[in-house]
Image (tube, rainbow, N blue to C red; front, side):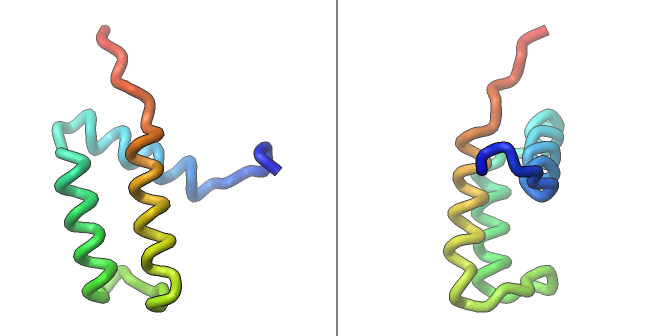
Length: 71
């Protein structure tokens, strides 16, 4: 089912791309997000059973982000 539409994946890719384009260090951002989710920051709504899956998804998204094109 690789061709199923996943709007969340597209959104995450776009946000990460734009953050990187603005000079945000994605490894620092990932650490902050991880701390926020594990620490139950206001934006966290998943329970403990899903937190690791969510953070793994972020790590994979950052790794899969296409490289910048030099123009």
